[in-house]
Image (cartoon, helix red, strand yellow):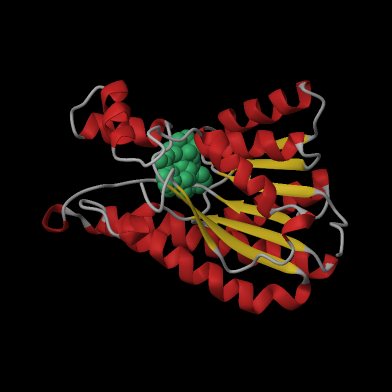
Length: 253
Ligand code: NAP
């Protein structure tokens, strides 16, 4: 089993929610972490908090759907922390609407952040991984990949990420790089809070109702996803690649 030569990780969308929890967990696991987010202030604050806990981290503002912004952010992390060999493609947005009301912009922006964003980030980081002969990519899919009313754009992007994951696993395996996806069910973050608002339900009631439909009878927390990400990026997971792991309290939420 080859050990990771450079313990530097990048997490996108790390300003809050699942990305922030994954960044904290990877820092606790001993990685230096680049926290990347559209909101520069929140990822810089997250990096400072990791630093105060004794870890090494840097916060960098970027738009994952913009090529130049991605290249610049990855270069900044490589310069400040070292060659990134772990990438968690987590940045995401929702623009929910039924098909007949979904605008071109709703479609393009969701596919732009999830699919184009994961493509641009993976392409920018893979050269560091292949040079080191070791790497880990984790993509955030969703149970919505199986279909979800009002989410034609999001569901398509999350299903697309599963194909992207399997293809990169095939292409990059010989360089010691594994590529997997986590497909979360209901996780308590601003994203699910926004969904509650959209359907006109108080967030706590929305969570209680969701928990009733989940076999383990609770909703998920960002740390539930961070636990699985921590394993997938570890040396112990070197024979796990091209997989989609549903983390949803049941076969699906
Ligand atoms: P969240 O709380 O809304 O956080 C998403 C983060 O991504 C935000 O910090 C956001 O920045 C950032 N972001 C958005 N667009 C970006 C861009 N173009 N470039 C860089 N950063 C960008 O969402 P979450 O619930 O933690 O979700 C994280 C991931 O898990 C997403 O991919 C989501 O689809 C997936 N997921 C979530 C759930 C769930 O139940 N929460 C379930 C399944 C899958 P701003 O703060 O500037 O907006």
